[in-house]
Amino acid sequence: MDYKNAGVDIEAGYRSVELMKEHIRKTMRPEVLTNIGGFSGAFSMEKIKQMEKPTLVSGTDGVGTKLKLAFLLDKHDTIGIDCVAMCVNDIACAGGEPLFFLDYIACGKNYPEKIAEIVSGVARGCEMSGAALIGGETAEHPGLMPEDEYDLAGFAVGVVDEKDLITGADLKDGDVLLGIASSGVHSNGFSLVRKVFPMEKEALETWYEELGGTLGETLLTPTRIYVKALRNVKEACVRVKACSHITGGGFYENVPRMLPEGKRAVIRKDSYPVPAIFDLLKKKGEIEEYMMYNTYNMGIGMVVAVDPADKETAKSAIQAAGETVYEIGAVVNGDKGVDLC
Image (cartoon, rainbow, N blue to C red; front, top):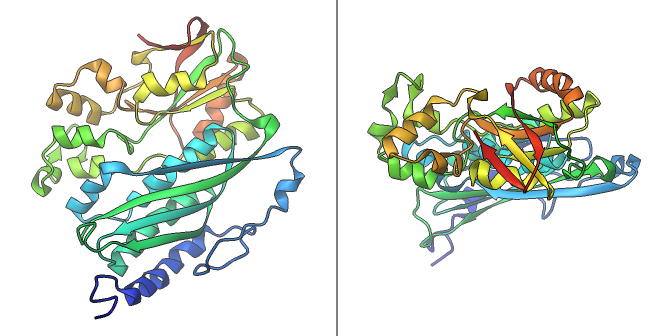
């Protein structure tokens, strides 16, 4: 009896690391001081000392049951982008610049090519956000997980000068709310998605004219990464007063998180186009509109609050990052919360 017979293939683990390296190299930053394969990742803080009050910000998250679609369609090269996006978007919400990222993959059986495919997506997400992929872990769990399944989670660390933290503290009546478009469902609400649509390969490969693609392709579209857009706004000398990443809990849970007491957000539902996937989901699942906005991003992945005098400059900066942006509402005095009208 040996470890391989017990279900853990050490050699497969070595091969996975070798296959990952070509993807990981693309994410390196000058501050990275260690190579992949060590016991930890080292990142120089030298540049950070240039800030007045450097403040670390962090985020951790996973992809949730969106993974089930990747299993069914045997498509694993974009799910890593989702994992990175869920972490670095939260860091960007605080005004932070993502510095480095670590991933954790738990699998029933280590198939090196599949693991490398997953990590290729993680590396792509890191490239898009400017974060270095400095480490991670692939854990083989025979008997605990099915051989053809895995779970994926990640952890990111960023930095911001304390004076540039986005807190919402200085929001005022009349501040403008800008909504940056999502790429679809992103990585939240898939437990409900899987109840509405049959989780069968044939159903996922069905073409929908209104979607302009198959259901599976549409649902697996990676989460947008908004780091560059928010960086552009900052570099345009616009102060982002408050920011909300629209994830699980939709508008009703996430928008109030960016508001101080005594301020309320008013968002016009007709101020931007709702992607067809949400209309299809609502219709097929007979889901009430309130529940849709309480579960999904409904086409807006990030809400940014700026002074009215800065809105055009902010819009231009966001568009220059390749994102689509809409003026979706305003901040008003009132009880902390959000009105969708």
